[in-house]
Amino acid sequence: MMETREKKRDLDKAIIIVLLAAILIIVLAIGYLVVSDKNITIPNIFESDGEYTYVLDEFVVNLKSEDNSSSYLKIKIALMFTDEKDGEDLDSNVNKIRDIVISNLRARTAKELMENQSVELLKEDIKEDINTSLNKMIVQDVYITDIIVQ
Image (cartoon, rainbow, N blue to C red):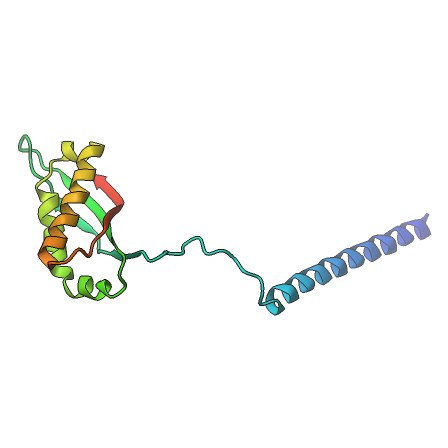
């Protein structure tokens, strides 16, 4: 009886060793293929196709009051442009751009910002005001990446 237990333990150990060796070989083979095969191409889902974004710092502003109640807006905005050189213009005029955005945001009420059409109008106003201020059609679209109205 004792001999059968020892044989079973030896068999279990052998099976475990074989399985671990097989797993190790598979992992090493996959690692080798990944490292050595430079022809593997992974599609870049973030490819820009000539579109660039300029992310502005977060804005926290008081909104226009409807009934003497205070409302706040926390928002993150990114500006889309198509000419890589225009990024330098945006960077050098970031304070002017932030002022334009803040002015547009403060002119809105919390109720207005809860409506989809009003948000689209806000984005269009920001785009037009920035382009007018820079005397160039740099900004093609405005993306709101985060918004909280309180």
